[in-house]
Image 1 (cartoon, helix red, strand yellow):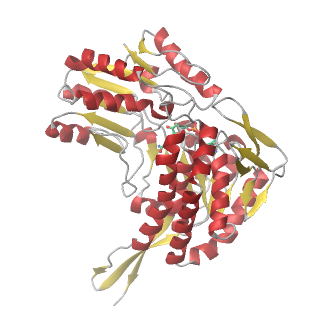
Image 2 (cartoon, rainbow, N blue to C red; image 1 turned 180 degrees about the vertical axis):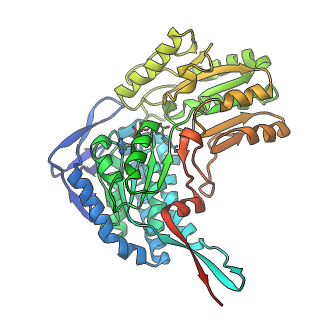
Image 3 (cartoon, rainbow, N blue to C red; image 1 turned 135 degrees about the vertical axis):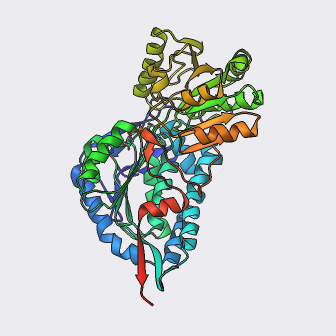
Length: 480
Ligand code: NAD
């Protein structure tokens, strides 16, 4: 082992940046800590403005060659990366679990297969990306999706490799080169992805990974004139800062941000389903952007719903995310735990009642919490907590349910539980959200548009929407 390799759960991870097809160190490092037990996992290169600029230069130099690479060859390479992700699935799963504390079994069964699928899906979509030519007074209109240029992709810690590949795959498929900046709390799988891409034969400079603090290198990346697209997933305050920085060059942005999504439970619902949907919101320790954290229940059902919910939530086992019996792992960081508890204690001080939870758990866990007696305009109802904290409110009419559901500044997702199909149609049509689920949750298809309304985001990605964003879409009009 060299000083630049760390061993995490038996897996060697290079702690340096990946720029222009080479590993590059920084003079300083930062410490990456596991949320499972607070142990040090690695000392990671702490990117500087110079490192960020070098990555942009590498992406710029590699762009003409990659953009000119035939679609079929780009698609072949993306499939080769998917093969590599599948080959190293166990390494990626165990490293990610140590890094972000999410369940190992979810990483094995769901998250890492999806990371591979992201590459396959966008490779295949690229090959069928087409538009029927159309005629204008004898002239032919031909639409093409041209590569846009170097892209900056910035990702959060709650689903690190899944969210990175959700951006990297379409950006590369589109013929762009990429600088990926993973979150500083979860830098490891991005480094493994660089190894996998290099092994698959991706040319030098096409994918670059810069590690470090967003506050230190973010502005350099997002204000750089050579960057043609920025795709960001993270918090609203950071999105505002990035938007301001990108404005200098009018760099197009895709922003996938936070939420405060509602779950509307009508009295005519299948109660087992509604309770399951509500308890599911504790998945990933509540660190899910789409989570329906505001549970709205029709008045006659509330006592029975609450009783069943409490019984079901009590069965959840918090513990070591590597254990097969664990349902909820730790939260990501002591600072995040502090933030979650702050929200809960302020809510309780303002009159909320904790039906369950309302306090920290062992280690870096927060007890699954359900708060009632919360006012619609209170902080706990209006702000994203990003932990295992739900609020419970009641309604008496469909109109009131819709009004409460739409009454935040967010609009990422919404879920409706009802046994009445007509009601489902009526209510889903009125909800302001990028994704609405009727009697289900978290069913995702990469062909579908994904994104948020209002403060939950700008733009949509997924299927053709991803290519619309990552490409310079061109219309060529030819005379007869
Ligand atoms: P964050 O905004 O703090 O950080 C996200 C990323 O931005 C990190 O890589 C960070 O280093 C970087 N960053 C920080 N300052 C920057 C700057 N000035 N310039 C450029 N980059 C900078 O968010 P987080 O706490 O890591 O993530 C949690 C948030 O992400 C929650 O709000 C959650 O809802 C949201 N999220 C949204 C989706 C979605 O698809 N809509 C998915 C997952 C998470």
